[in-house]
Length: 504
Image (cartoon, rainbow, N blue to C red; front, side):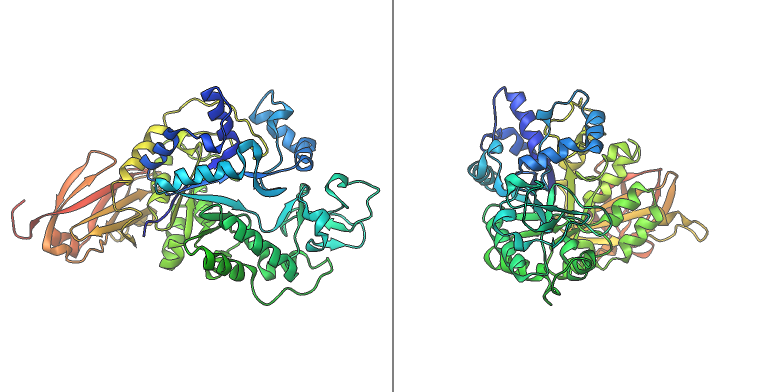
């Protein structure tokens, strides 16, 4: 089974830019063939269209009224106009594709074209809350966390047209939130203590399952029973059901759509719990934090400390729409090693639109227009890396995370080196070699290849020019000696050559 290679796209900005490039209004039904061809060339397996669902006028008004957001808009897009702003894609008013993007019909055409090329479609699912424009506020207010009195973090609404109207007589509904921050004032908090809310959200998930091949679940840990109970302990409500929402909902969806993929945005060390409840992949935020913190030793400890199944269930990334652009955090010298790491680890490999071009400005999700950016030099290394990886066993063979051995007794630099071996053929394998340190490092790589001592081996760096021949008996006895320059990023392909005993 191929490990997924996911590509996240800011759909609203992307479609606007494609329309400007083509000189006509494009929808999801009109995507040029060149886009699909590029995704195939880079061997992406899943395309995440971030932000396709409908948002509403009240969520947009909240974005325009926010002084903090307006300051960010000024920095990111000087001279921006109100037409450049929409509601947050995570304040969803309706789980149907926005008419501006082509509606559900346009999405269907896009998905058919994608699937025809062997690629799959990922969409957003926001379990914790809905946008303040959602019809359930008028039709099903009992589904939400409520208060009988006005209190901080709540609003009153009888209908969408009356949100925040002082004359409203309906219940006080809580804004969506997590335990550590004030409420998001463009959202309304669903109450997962209620069986009716869970039933409604499972039905919603099933309806989404008919339109895509998987979902990225926003802040998935917020609806775990203990997290939810702690977050809303000061609001009245019954104890939650004993069963976890995710166990029931994922089971229900996979019963109808067995190959449906669940990706969790997950933090706070709760990744393994979410995996145990059925998630195929969870964010590996620990790896991200240690990469941007330049904690080479901590990275090796983290990766080697994970059980193989947990490592293989990680979604490894350098950026996404919530994080700063990685090119603004890591230098051009550091970046290739970090990119090779996340693209050769077992699990989901996760890239973000603009990352391949080295963009340095993170665009708020409320903006539907981005500043124009030139094509910088970083595009070439990513293009080289992705096209080369497509011809290797990385993501398709058997992965092994190797534990580097010290090159000599008083040399600690092996702890800066990550070694990832992939094999899909008996006498051929690939080895990703990454030195995360800003200084030279050495180690022995204990290769895990059955019968490696029976053959001698040629090794070629697919990302460089180095080529070597090594005796199999030496590799089996000592391992592969590596002396790496700072921030080395090498991908060696090994092929068995002459049998042992034949002179090289």
